[in-house]
Amino acid sequence: MPTFESGFRKSHSDPALLFSPMAAVFATAFQGMDRQESQQRGMQTAIHLLKSQTIGFDGTPAATASPTEDHNQDLENLKQRVGRVEQDLNLVSLVKRAEVTDGKLNQMSDTVADIGGNLKKLFDNQVELVIKLKNVERAVNAICKTVALLVGLIMAIVVGLFAALVIYR
Image (tube, rainbow, N blue to C red; front, side):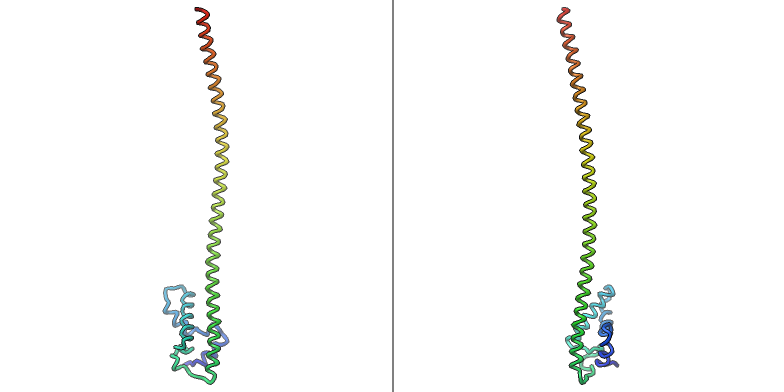
């Protein structure tokens, strides 16, 4: 059966081994989450139990963990490593948040680009509409001039006929 001392000394050089026995046990309690999240939860649970000294490093209850001559030094070293692991977990959390933020910013950038494209289309449509309105205005002006000429011609004919009636009567 591994002891606190042997477990600590083996894992002292490899940070990944520090909490691996306990983290694996606790990670199974968090099934249904993605692998990384369940490992993080397992590590956090292991860190909490180690800090509260309810279990030894090898997962045995604290009362049965093998005491050593330099147990206090090992415990201090372990607490320092726990602090570094907590910092690493905080960094992982910050990186995840930064990735999520980056994804949201990319999505917002795409949305802004889409809005810009839609505004350009709207402006192009507005320019086309102005050109069409100018053409309609020219057509209406031409029609008005034609109607005015026709009314003038009709009036001239009516006046001429009226004058002819008056003269020949």
